[in-house]
Image (cartoon, rainbow, N blue to C red; front, side, top):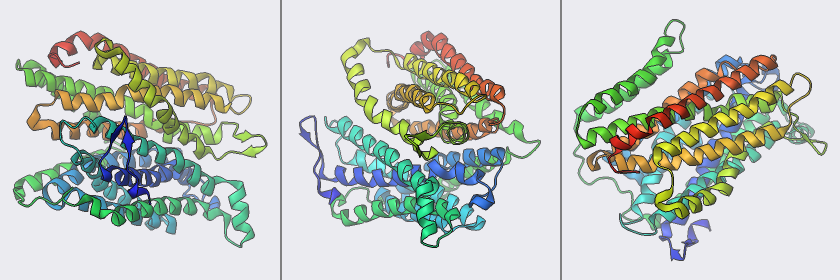
Length: 492
């Protein structure tokens, strides 16, 4: 079975448990990205076609809140694993909750829909940080196989992300599958729930692999023998998380939209506070919060892939290839496909350049510039829809450019957090890094409310605003590079 394969990367055999965690993560990400690929389509589909009949604005805000919660709940999820139940139990419990969530979505009905989304969010908050922690525990701190092992693990994430939309998109959207169901006497409008069920099956496979190979993890991810955490610390963590989540949810209410400005004001205030102090640690933390803002900007646009870009692919793109209609969810596989293809090339490039490679601030500027270029491509694509549906090649180029941006920012940012954070605060700063993704996803939902499919000029202006936003952020990052180098104090 998969857990029995011993991986060998760069000539060095990896720990036996890595192959199990690789396949567990692959199937968990299959479940997450499979559900994500069809979520917006399901929400905006008319009730007569089995959907929820949400408006674009309703679906965008809901999508932003859901993807925000997935990242935000990783903070208390990691806290629970570290202080109480251990990473191994957190993976198992979180996986069960995720599977229940997907099967609730498959059941149909509005109550089941909301219950399913809540369960997937809670389960992922437990699962996501804990399985990464278990991978880290496979190695000693100075083990030369460590980076290669994490690279392989990251490939599992993207293989799952590549396969998931192909499967759930076919089940949910394919005319062929709808016809087959109808021939068996089933209602073809229920195909959305077959897609959600496939995501649940993926998570169930992940749990089966994990439980079957649990002997590989003896002593790994155990619960702490002594729980030194006091009730005050526990209460503070959960009150802070619940308060922040509630605040961001309430910001969608009319008259309270101003609360969203806190997403920018708070990190800018942190930059100002730490940059005024003259010690080395404070300077590096100030730099961390600059990267926080840049990452938040990036993710707010990147996550349009599952929102406005997904709607563009569904409503405005010519999806007929060789006479066969392609499910629009399939475009969601382009990003992980390009990560798999380009990731090794970026590794070779940075390695070959060595000390001559761009610094972290310049790589962030490159990421934001590529983000701007990806949305600039969508401007003529939007204008072209005034006459005919857009060519799918526009989306291929879009995903190529934005994936290159992701590779300049995501792994680079994670590495920078571990180098810039004071040793006693590494865990906290990694939490801050994931919080940037949560805030960015929230903004993605807010920005997604501006999508329109019946005004080509308006849609072109909408995409151009992302290009301008990303371009301005890239220029700001370049302008700040000399100052950031001083704040980073020798860290590249």
